[in-house]
Image (tube, rainbow, N blue to C red; front, side, top):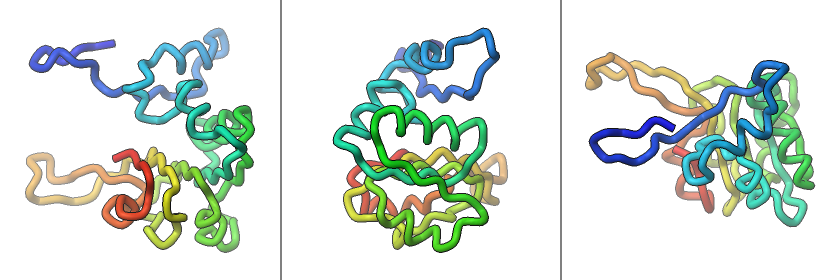
Length: 158
């Protein structure tokens, strides 16, 4: 892992999956330090989330995050629902989940009212929004409205 020379601590890591056919996906995911696994896909992190047959909702069904995330949760005995653009009442389904993975690519789509109090939320969204205060002219936000969700969840990724 690359190290930040100023602070000499590892950077957070996000793995793009699926990888090439000749690579073992689980070995790649498990090579990331548990503490730096921003996606929560390390086997130990998935196990911590899914212990006891939790209910999980994955918002988005991409081959990069949605489907692999759903399969990893399912492998750890979570009951998984996948919410996508044609799902009726996505708010209602999401509100029933102990674990929510948002990977849909829509800025602040998941509001605080969608989330069950105490749920764990993994926001994989990376969406640029205009911000004239930033040198770049934009800042990145997720698929979950962080300001609302952080008041409700037991844990949430930034």
